[in-house]
Amino acid sequence: MKKRIIFSGGLGNQMFEYALYRELCYKGMDVEIDLSLYDYVKMHNGYELDRIFQIDHTNETRISNRQLHILFLRILLKFKPSFTIFDENSTFHELKRLEQYPGRYFHGYWQSESYFPNVIDEIRKLFVFQNIDYKNQQKTIQIQRNNSVSLHIRRGDYVGHDLYANCCTEEYYKKAIQHIIEHVKDPFFYIFSNDPPWAEKFIKSFHVKHEVVVFNQGEKSYQDMFLMSKCKHNIIANSSFSWWGAWLNSHPFKIVIAPRKWYQDQTIDYSHIVPDSWIKM
Image 1 (cartoon, one colour):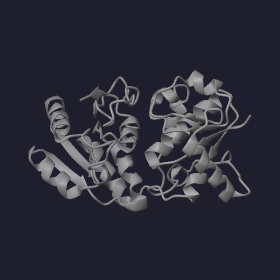
Image 2 (cartoon, helix red, strand yellow):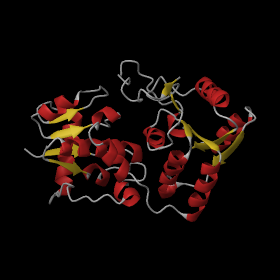
Image 3 (cartoon, helix red, strand yellow):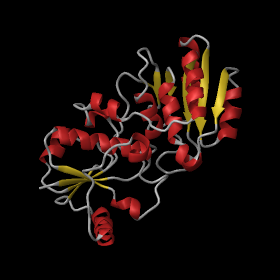
Image 4 (cartoon, helix red, strand yellow):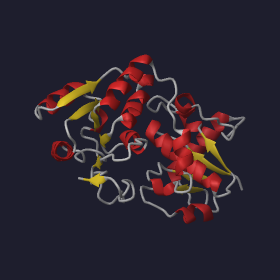
């Protein structure tokens, strides 16, 4: 039976979903991509992998009656019958479970490199950013000339959120910045945030060289991830966006600092999200 991976969420989540797709293809499974939910609801900037990475979608699901299919998916995701849909349900599963699943659909964010261990090199080759504009190209030159550190501060939609709030606290960022100051000579911090005024005020208290990057908005926001990946070191938020920015950083001696607490809900297993080589705080 042909399997389908239901895609949803923003860029970072789409990258995890696509990585799982490539892994299951590697395992010899007959699997395809289902993008139908993007026709039903507005999610961030919509589906972006084709535009940002120029990924060919010859295996995207082709559906004649898309509206009927979307209705079916909505019902499926509401009731989640185990015989039809494998729902990640915020719990890490061994790949073998996915391979052996008899149903048709997979749904989840699959936020772990443990979901694509055999295609890591392939994913790095596929996730090469395209259409980087002149301003970001020039910023990249500056980033590569100093001891650059990306710092992702996500507020906005995270403030007061039942799932994400109170994970990346001011104390987390203070400890992370201090660790960088102690281990990196003359660091320069590049701040990426959906609340630039707050980020500017916060970073000034450390009296470090810094810049709050504010020129990538809307459909250009992926270029922030590109700049993160070009920094020598990374301090990430509990966000798949900055996770990928750090993961795609190819600097051989990089320091990546991630929050020990990924979700507010302590019943959710998030121990698999942060790679072992990164520092948890």
